[in-house]
Image (tube, rainbow over all chains, first blue to last red):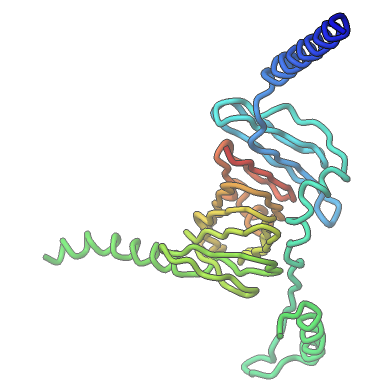
Length: 142
Length: 148
């Protein structure tokens, strides 16, 4: 009986030691990584073009020119990280809400009037139905 | 006295220009979902689709909420939930070659689609976070800012 209790105590002691070692290793591993404060991702425009963004602070500056690349910032005096690739699926998850809330791209209609008149030229008159249709599609006239 | 007035005149005109720029809306809201508020001159206003936003406004979203802003140069910024965006400055006067779009994302997520301003004056479009400044040259990007 005494031997069994001793064995059980030894086992519990070994488990708690392993737990402490695990926590210490975890702290050691994570202490080298500062918390990411900002994440900035460059993506392709709707027309397929890609521009560029520069992320800068007191620690330095990094420029992104390749779509689906990411820069992380851990502090205002620490240089932004080097750009690295990120999967489209990750972008879609991280920014799902703000992507969904994007206002639709504006549509521009140009109207021309007859000289010295408030009458529209024939071509411009035909745009009116298009304007109303576009406005209705966007629930703009509700 | 006449000389004093002539010296004063440029400052009066400048002050009037600044006031009129601040009075003009920078754009308006679209796709509002959930709780979206605008802080303006110390007052808190409930936002709706079509609500105008002005320089010095702060737009904030609650949990499970989001909103889009379309600016007068067709730039678009949309915010995810629990976000806070300060609209610091917006000047879009192509005829006078005056351009400035300066916003600050305090927290949350934002997606930015550039408009005419970045084409006409790329250095005039800046988004700031508490840790960095983002300069744009005609493009689309996303930002996430975590609170301390």
